[in-house]
Length: 128
Image (cartoon, rainbow, N blue to C red; front, side, top):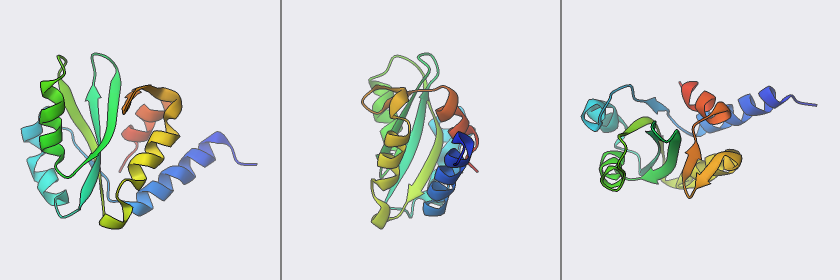
């Protein structure tokens, strides 16, 4: 019987096989311009946007993470930050996002916003 850690690692490995992970360390959208350009040939990307004040992460998809970030920021009084992006090809459109929503459903706060704790925090932190 597999342990929780082994299952988590296998699941993470499966997602990594499907995508090229990109992590951002910049404090604002402008800081990630080079990394976004590097990933721009992909049809759509799964993004992780952190609202540190409310300890929440939005897991969503967009053709332009930079534009999506700006749109979300306009409607949010707290400072937001893109903390990771998973570019995906046309054939995978929506699959990775759906898998992540299912994996972290126990942390769902509302819609695509998830509590930035434990398993989700560890998952994002350990992305290559």
